[in-house]
Image 1 (cartoon, rainbow, N blue to C red):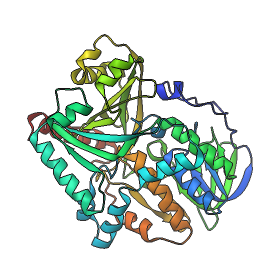
Image 2: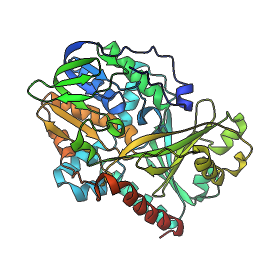
Image 3: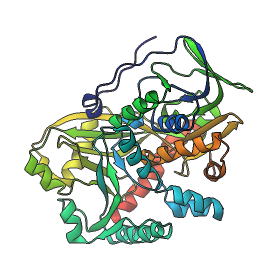
Image 4: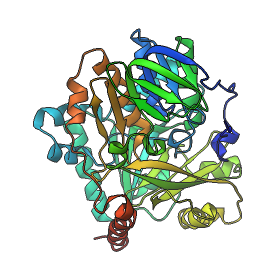
Length: 427
């Protein structure tokens, strides 16, 4: 079988050393087989191992190969659609539980980093930057909403306040989330995989799940092996392919693009982001940026519906970066890459059971760093018989995309264009 390496990215180039893991070449048995070694699968496996389950993780390529190892590295609370959308979509009891979970992911990440000594450049503080008064009003409403669920880590920033954290003339204000932050995302995934192995779990790389044999004792088949388990957790997200058709019909892979500059002089780096916070703007198709540990500016943005890779990522993202920081005109781009995330029509995650012993979580819709860690905890809870939080998430509606797989990407792109135009005119 061919070996799938990491795609070229700053994260792959700066990853902590990690030994290649074996492919599965035999028939084995375990309590739980997890499909996918991204954050959802890794979080699920780690919580399950801590609770005494035997766990095997199957990864088609390498740990953190997909969105978990290529994202912007930002710890952002809540969901891609905020808790008010949850309140409209779920019952009051379910909304209460889901709302409380909105702020749990960042705490789980920090606990994992501390407990297992994961070296992933964790920094605290994240900023939402507003271009206009409409966006400022939205941030004020968001602050009130989050505080209603007991979250008290937010601070509004006026014009002077935003200039103290982002050296840019584009924003009129913003909101600082002291509970946000940023990490080296691939190193977080690698550290979690090492933690899994320290507890006796096994992670197989280059071992794609090609068929799930359902039944009272499900079997997951790979090209050269199989895993017989009591439970299966499906955590492939945008890289699941056609393995589970009923999941593919209600989600759409999308691409996002990221660049990393050459290392910046210390005084230049400090002048861009004096507090070393990460930043995302408030547009529908938002930009996001932060400094790496070696003082590169990592800048991302945009969405390609249907996960087609642009011919030249740098030509797409660099103009966005220079619009924000024109002082970087003569700074080189060292890395440019793309990665896929899984979008749902509601932009809320999809969680559920396919059978009594097949569970899934997918569709973070670009907001996955924190949510996936909560999903892993909730999946571990339901497998040990505590279903309340899992069932609350599962109650969220799973809509099919209009037009099916053929027309979902162009229709979604048209919708995004509409919202992007609204952002530009401040409507």
